Image 1 (cartoon, rainbow, N blue to C red):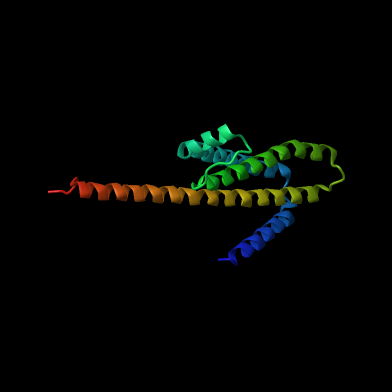
Image 2 (cartoon, rainbow, N blue to C red):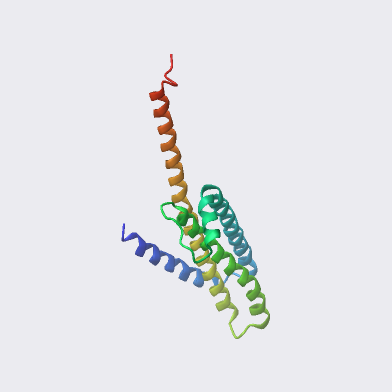
Length: 171
């Protein structure tokens, strides 16, 4: 499994480079809807995982808010697995919002950047952010699987207790 991480990085860098090369011919007007879709996806993940954390780990959030940013929190739960996608989505949102401010300035003033180079760099950034968001989506699957496994285990435990207690034995 250790070989997968370097392969994923090499593949990602290759995709970003390909995005820079082929994106040179894609006008920013056509790229911007893709940035907006990325922003929307990041916002949805941010909201859903944030709500999920508040529902699944309310005591952890209460403790964290009471202690402040520098306080230590108890360990033993998977809330940090949910926190990483929130942080990733926040960073992606911030970058896309900044692009929305910077892109019109670059288009209007140029800043000595050739249009083709600017389009290529923009498209490379779009590919990189999309890969990052895709990774963030995959990160949400681990905690979801853990929660489902815990629920299944609890359901089995309750079923075993019902059998021991003489409930649901059937005719």
